[in-house]
Length: 114
Image (cartoon, rainbow, N blue to C red; front, side, top):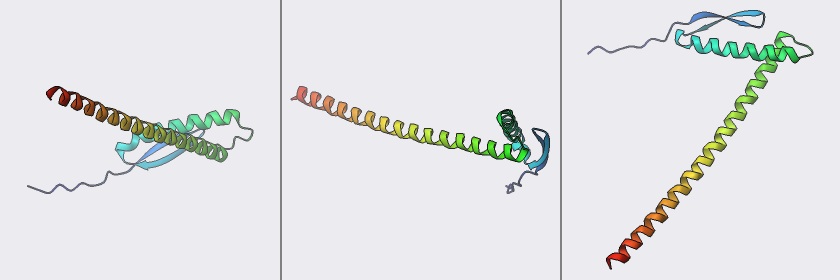
């Protein structure tokens, strides 16, 4: 049986448009759709910020968009951590309740058998 050697995907240039600027970014073909989706999201965010900014320079909009997106991402991470913690506590409570119920059932069965 021959060994299969995997080679990394060849990066291909992808043209991205952010507001009025075009960028060529190299990425593997399998990541192209995700990159285009991310660029589209960033473009919408920058356009929204530009509509409300007093000084809408491209660099300033890019920084504001990066900060806003990062803030949203970190808030989402915190909410997910709290949710996971709450789920863990609920699972623990359920397990304790089931253990208590099992003990009661065993005690009732033992009492009937005696």
